[in-house]
Length: 497
Image 1 (cartoon, rainbow, N blue to C red):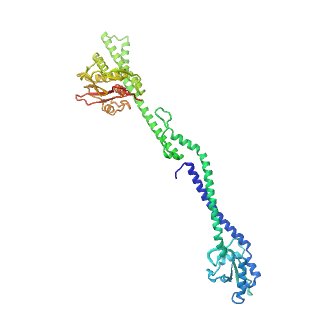
Image 2: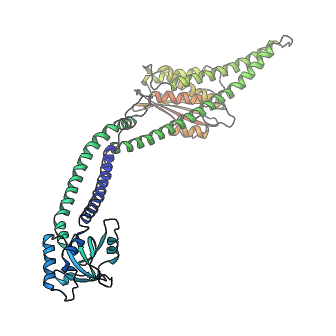
């Protein structure tokens, strides 16, 4: 059954009411018939006795002692006065001896003696006895014994069926049709009235339920956490089905949010643990060097003291670089677009960045490779692009063995530019290579490291800067071994909402 919840309730209620009405009508009809039978039997209770007392010829034996024509005249007169009755003259064994009419109509020659004895003994009415003309159909009756003989025996009985065949035939043709027609009309009228009143009543009662269903169907959370509408299915016309579907969707959404929050909390705990791991070693070393230099009772040569200062400064610089990268990555992840946009020469920026590393003391040299691409202009944040190039080259320099130079080249293809950074080091971990190649964030979730710590910050920053400019960061096959990173940037940067 389709339709709204209120309509289904109205239809169910109307069906139950109609069934109840039919049951009441049926029971009422039975009670009416029983009441009518009891009334008629009480009114005609002494009919048989009256006939026996006032027409003594009926009580005479029907064995030829009296004129048969006189008996038939009496029976005919009584049945004309009341056509609804059938009169039977019975012998002492309740067998039919005389009946006015076709003898073939008497289909049962013997009357139920038990019911007749109960009637004669004054049992409560109504009492139903047998009808010789309708076997198996109990009917109300009146009975009276004939005057006793000289020896005290009863010669027979007068048996009167009060609702005889004529009355039954007329009632079946008139009364029953009217009763059922009236019942049908009352049932249809009651159903229509019930549907109308029930529809209005349940529509009013289920109005809050419909509002809740519509609110649950139209509620969801967008990326900003605000309420946003969601598509409503055809089942939403049923308020209960709509609430059920909305609850399942809301439960799934809450479960997903809880799982995401648990994963985020786990990632935050892992980040804190990794930061603590990476900071503990340099801070411990820095504290040790400073504690040694602060002791007045320890005389150190000037060269040794200078070496301690240099080591402490290196550890401090390591801490500074790590914290700076963490803050920078957090700042980049909190935005979805580049705030500062300028038009600049990418080829000049690559040249200046490589030259900055050439002038610094590093274990591996840095050099430009490949033919110059000529002027390459792009639009974006100059400082962020410089930061990405610096991180990639710095990683290559620090992890390279120093025997071969770090090669940096710039290629221009169509509307995009590619910066390649190659080193001869041991290569990146397999997990980082996989994430770069499929475009997954390097730091989400933080990759596991055998020794712990918070590695990959430089790559994460460069990857995020590339994405903010509409580009990408991935790896390429390195024929000479090591790592070959490809920073792809559009010459006209795309805004990312």
